[in-house]
Image 1: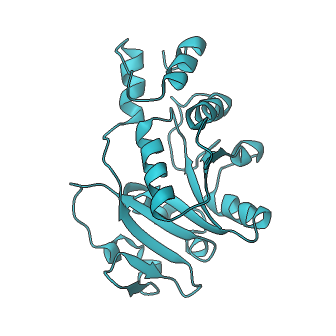
Image 2: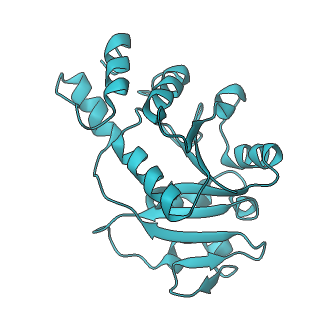
Image 3: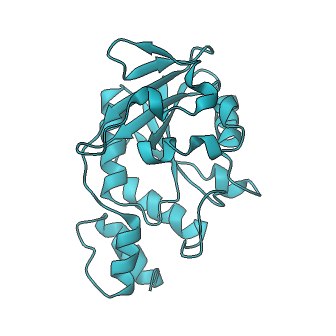
Length: 213
């Protein structure tokens, strides 16, 4: 049982998020991808992030109809900063028989050295790091923080690495839809159309609640 953990602010969720999750789910034979909206991210400026309740509801609307996608309010229910290490450990407790794989983009992975207890998280779950066609070329080995780089043993083509704990880190490409939540928010503030950038149910929710105006 492989379960993907897809965290993010999802402010708002859009087709780029959804398509990446669908491709990763299929490629790695996952039984489920759990979307985990961050309530209080420690590394992001959240001045223009709408209330976590709205972001949870938008994710729920976006994934409706996909039996392999689910929503977790774990970080919303937990008080304080939303540290990934705490989320992964709690989900390991809840799902002791599952292999957990944390899904994130290369841009976020390059900042993993700034995460709370980042060295420990490599012992807790696998990582699937998504790259995009046409992105600047960077050696997968170079993407690791110096503190763990020498620990990671390359397998095969060099896009898969194994930590001494047995946890894996795999780099894989996904379709580049070039959709940005920042650009969506800007368009909404300026009264421009964002249709076909995000699910219509999410757009309707945004309009009904006057979000990002």
